Image 1: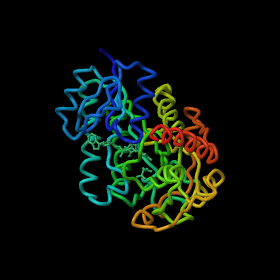
Image 2 (image 1 turned 120 degrees about the horizontal axis):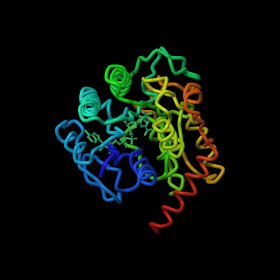
Image 3 (image 1 turned 45 degrees about the vertical axis):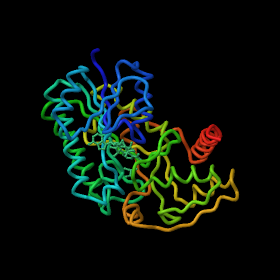
Image 4 (image 1 turned 90 degrees about the horizontal axis):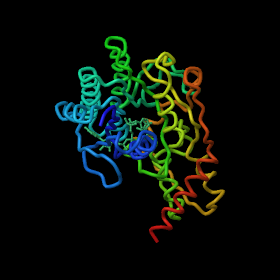
Length: 316
Ligand code: NAD
Ligand code: AKB
């Protein structure tokens, strides 16, 4: 095996789908999925790997002659606030291990997912530009903002080709979210299709940037395939999908399920969401590597409902 691709945090919401996309593109034998615990959901190669353990990380890199790393492992915003110091420790240690092990062991390219969580109250809340001041309000956001700069540092100092996207909240039917502030926008579809009431942890008017899984995965592959000289932003690119509030997604779901019942019980996640952007501008991503989202809210709703109806019908 040579020139293989390692994915950390592959059991997560994004990793589950991105791993399959990479396997399809590069072949099962060239993709190494990894996470803290074994997974039964992959065909192909899987390694148990805690990225905070640099010796184990290097062992996997050398064993498979890894040339690209998609470093997805992280603790997300809402879970992260339950133990802020541990979130910082895990997220930063894991990233610095990936960067340093990549430099030493001749990995060519690293993908680092950032987030809209890097923005706080200093950035314009609507149409937030790529180069807005970053003053994150969560430990997770602090780690992502610092991580973006470490990626840029490794690029300029060592020539390591680190590329990054600031994802909005990702919505997909294939996997469940892992403890973020945008998770409601996935759970709500599951409840609607199961014809159960939904209690939303954000208030009905809280608008946030979101992106459909297919768009998020395509953006990642397009960014990583773009010619090196096209990548002008070495911190991270904003990518926009669409923006909506809980009330808007409920209206969209009620076109199919008019009886769908929703209550609002905002909790600590409301404080996080209230300080994040409502919408972001992504003209640099469009300019540098032709990024364009394809999924509107109505297309997301239709796809989520169709896919989840099929999934739950299979269980019955
Ligand atoms: P997730 O929480 O669903 O999955 C994260 C995975 O990382 C989990 O499977 C977990 O077991 C693993 N992990 C945690 N600590 C680890 C460690 N020390 N070593 C190895 N694995 C470890 O997250 P996700 O939604 O799939 O997100 C993937 C990446 O994308 C994260 O970096 C996240 O910050 C970023 N992101 C996600 C979203 C989103 O809406 N899903 C939005 C913005 C950014
Ligand atoms: C979260 O809510 O923490 C993630 C994100 C937007 O980074 N979905």
